[in-house]
Length: 343
Image (cartoon, rainbow, N blue to C red; front, top):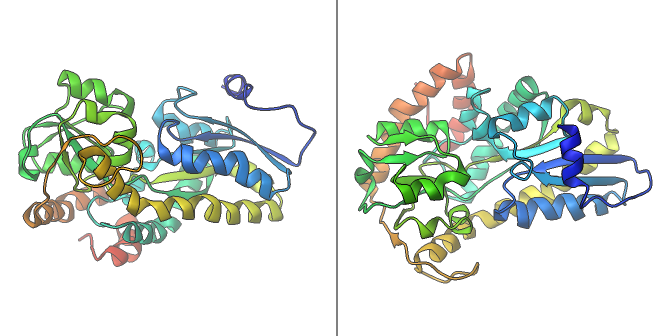
């Protein structure tokens, strides 16, 4: 695997004199704005320049390496590369307690989502340390995970009986409680699945769906955040982190907050509004050509129904699966911020 990584990054890594630190970094989806606008500039330019050239970076992405989504953090913990970032939900098979980071329907704005993430961060740090031998550097958002359908719908109730690709396990549980059939399809396979009827609908960020061309194979957009904010966790191998000097650790911690994390969060709320405009033509699209998906209204009744199912069925089921004291920790941190208690 290390040989494969070296081959993949060789085309972008220039010969250079010996430096204090070199980081092998695996980014998230290469085609999406989070990587292109924030991850890549930070790792390729911002951090090396801030270090005065003492830190160099070899950057690729997990899809360019053809990594299995569930393998990204375990391989990080083994030291196959130094830094990795991807959606936390890809790791919940190994760490079901991690589902408590990105709960659907409890944060409706970027400010609320960041407060939720900040509250969850001590728990997330413990999970990555214990499960993946990794130190958490940053948690950034994709825009809220909304519903694309290649099927006529008029509201949330119309998802009942449909096959829906979920963006994470908790979302899948919520969809099933709503009467839909949760289907496991990878992000890259969704357009073909929608086109061929393998799924009727699929959940992802509005901007991700726009960038990936989901508007070509879907007709209706339901902008209810059934998939939360799909938090992307950036972590560094713990052995690598422990081997860095205190000054280098402080530099990376400071720079990734201001140069990556803060910037990604600052754009998150406007991104949702702009992405919906780009997908539906309702408003100005700054990203390119506006499309013509049908925008489905989310009624108060739809939202309240989904929220009730989340709090009475989905969260208690997660607490049971996570075990230990995770429900109590969640109640005392995230729950206090979002006004939800798991009973």
